[in-house]
Image (tube, rainbow, N blue to C red; front, side):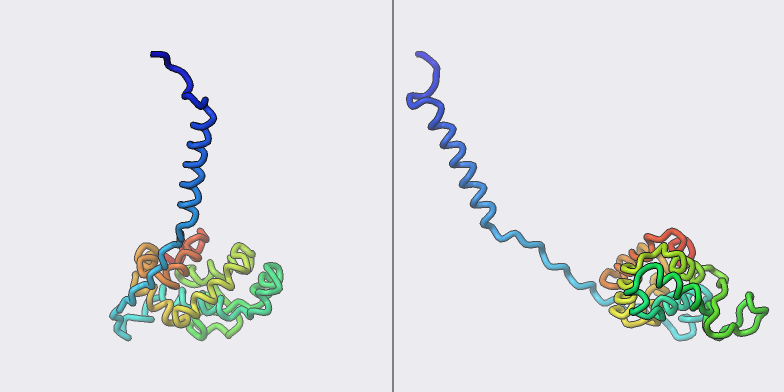
Length: 195
């Protein structure tokens, strides 16, 4: 018995393999490939007594930092990083509005002036904004996420309930998890605001 090319030569085999490959490719491409929809984060009921929430310096400090971001006018942000940095340098606020600060000799700092806080979170946020370390697009996203969570107080309440731990906050999912990820990417904010 002699081994060699099939009776019709190699061309029919090549055509058959090519036709089979083409048919497989067409069949696969015709399938509707869609990503599974993201499941909404399950609502997390964090039990916080009014006596506990808001009493820690970390809560007040982080709240002041978020309030500062939320106070930046959108029209300033839309003009770009330089305009935002200029605005930030002229519009720093107290670490907690009206609360006595060590930087003011124990007196309430006037609205419009920001002093370094005990923990440094609000100071870190103010500094990265004034130095354009956070791009305007990220600030706009942070503002949108804070609004989606329910405002500054609700955002801080959720983060406080998760012990300001990035892992716990991101496990909550949804807007609060995305917001934590936005902050955790900035080293000075991560070090001063999260455990």
